[in-house]
Image (cartoon, each protein chain N blue to C red):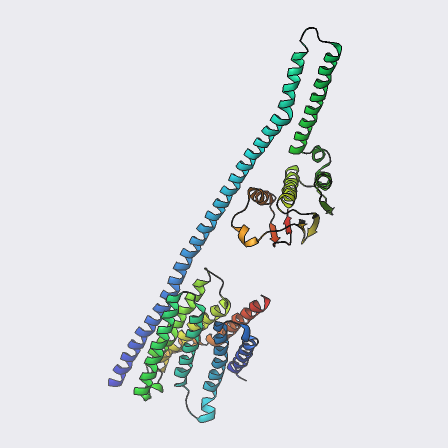
Length: 212
Length: 263
């Protein structure tokens, strides 16, 4: 079994652990738990897409990032105490989702193409929210501080991974480009095991919550 | 050739975008570290200010206590000693009066003897109040026992005292702080708490010398008294601070007071 399938199993277990007893938790926690589960399902579907339907999964990243943006925006909106930040998150959520949906409706072919601008608008705001969440810890302890720390690392890694994708997707015969792609691939190969660090933070957060 | 040019354009565009993306992440993190540092400095300054404020409060309470104590000693000396010595002086002057009868002479002498005895007793009591001699001679444990006996016999209160610690290795200053803390607590329990039962227990708790103190008095509301503490409690705080320990106070209305402090 490939390493990524072990990660799917691990992420599924983590999501279930977060879902256990989530009824008594805050809205932010509930949204986060549901996000973890949805993320596992979407990740697994994305990986199996070719073997099931014989279609490439490039377009599916748009679906994943759209869901990720929606769920995590809601999570941060519920987490922020400052009304100004809550409003910014909500307005940006409506604007970005509307923009992408309208774009996919008017230009359906763009839904099946990998756009790094789309990745930028759906991931970068989340990185900013995550950093603000960390900053808020100075004023009062945040419920999912460690999970957010893991999430920030995960988002930055994902962001850099997908944003550099167009570089090695451009087919060109230049040797220096091949060399560059080799280096890039080497660097990006570290991202997959990095998932373990992300899950360690999520599990540590659970341990902290349970010990309270 | 055209295809190559297109690819180069794509690469340049992609590079620029990636550069922009990297820069935005870098800028976000840099801003986070900048504002975090500012916040940390702000929190540290606030904490320092709080400490200074606390030190000022302690100093104020120490000065206030000193003044109160001076006033009390002055009052005691005036009421219990000076007044009696005045009468003694008056009586001794009377002895100079010519043609005193034997009985008058004896009466004056008796008065002088009685008054000097009372003045002596009062001066002993004042000295005892300032520092019990048993404390100097036999140490903290005996002094607490005597304090407990005094309260039990004079103030209609049942004080239970147990001790499993050895105080002899403590510095005299430390012992005196503990003694003063207990004096203050006992006074508070009776004066403010109207307690009829008090318990004092010295034990080793989590490898720290700890005193558990409780009474069955009227207690108080922690929320309303947290903001404003009396000079007595501030003194206790500062004494525990000198001992290098921590104090925990718990109380509810009509549920007495439970206090523990370590040293």
